Image 1 (cartoon, rainbow, N blue to C red):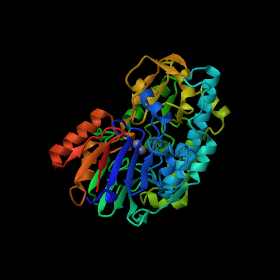
Image 2: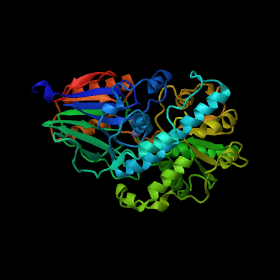
Image 3: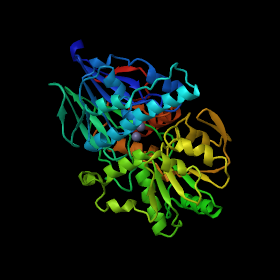
Image 4: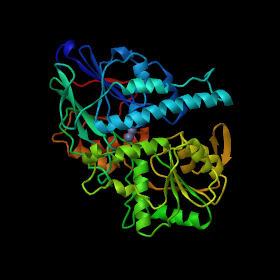
Length: 463
Ligand SMILES: [Zn+2]
Ligand SMILES: [Zn+2]
């Protein structure tokens, strides 16, 4: 570390002490680079922070680099651009394509939620305003620049960054930023060792400072054994037999593809009957098109074919009318609808119709953040609030943890062990406090590295 002009700092503006809202600011000289620019989701006390002024003036930020397309990593970009950020948003081609879908949808949901709050008068804002609009999202999408994996992209004469595959969702990356002889590696969200569709994550490059996620820092995923998704197959058979339908809240991006892939395999193995399967999410259908694009083939395992999402009775509900018809399914069916934590999207409209009826099942398929409806259902709440009203929960609730695309504690440690040399410091982020502390403790004990769980707003020197 030299004079003050050569100071390189890292600030944890979001995604510290919580899973969502990832934002990490790296400053050297008068250059500011933001790694990830995510929305807070889940608990209200965190979501309120989406409305707070950005900690530094957005027009003072020169570059944004994104790890992947999930809202908690890219969802704040439209607000940043509207409030003055005028630089490039660097990311992989896959993330650029999927983020465009995610951000337009987010702008649309923000506008619609504000509209509904205005009609129902259940907002704290008067009049209720969207956090940003579809037009803001479109302006943000115009700033995206895609870069290839493994290529160094200079941003100043002292600094540059490179992307490494993270195997989490299509296009997902870890980001290694270099400034002079300092380097910071951001894991982004790391995938499991064996993603059923995507090429696996790459070994991490060496870095002096490492920032690692800890979504599942305190647990290991169950071993699926010889029969993948057996519990889901059982639930589907049971539900259909009693004349009910199965609602699967699924993240529109990647999770819907994984669910279709699993249902297709279960059907081919004769483990579930050939009932109608509806994909009720315009965003999921748009993402499915990206997954089927030939330019994305390089993202997939060599034996993955676009036809593997096909089911005998696959239907798509693109219009609102088609979606509405699914509220009262006349014959048993499977409905895949977003969002995955039942906190927004069309799935919210299905819940008041399906939850009060014992015949139906809601099958959760992934991480459920605190404060979301999905978490309430997972925790066995008997009444949940939907659009301002409480609804009794009589439907069966099941949870299929095998869909997780997040590395578990053992896999996170495995990624760290693959670093070519021990880093100077590891910062543990993107987790609920218990999960981050648990992972930090294992890194301290098993690897004997200097490891810290930073607090939100904390600033540290990295060079
Ligand atoms: Zn993610
Ligand atoms: Zn995330």
